[in-house]
Length: 196
Image (cartoon, rainbow, N blue to C red; front, side, top):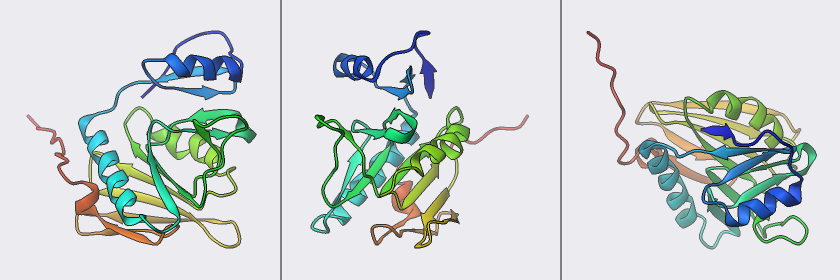
């Protein structure tokens, strides 16, 4: 969940300085600072499951997984954001003079919440598509067994694939790794709505 925390516009340098000492992470949106509120236990479980799996599976493969606290800078749209999980192929490319802000993920995973899913699907994906190295965008539903995948093909088109049901297996095409829904949703307890 994101919440705008101030009414004035900030320079990128002011934002970066504030982030150094902030208790909670905030995204930068071309002058606006938007705080990131806490997630649910299921969101954290899913994020942790995917990160741990990719971190282990990619060991020795010239690719590395990162989680939430590493900032992604999107120069074209002047956005600083913290994807749930990112994978960088090869060496990380940093913003000039920084070690806390990368530019070149090949894979981004976002775990959807009710408050952010529209933004993650539309504007955030549009911003992410401007990253030349990005080859795959994954959206994971935290309320049911559902994963949406966008893969950039050789001609630069984004192709959509949906995985549904607990027996499906998601193929992270950009890094050559497969992960079962059971592993993605390990320890997740879906809430059931009771009807009167």
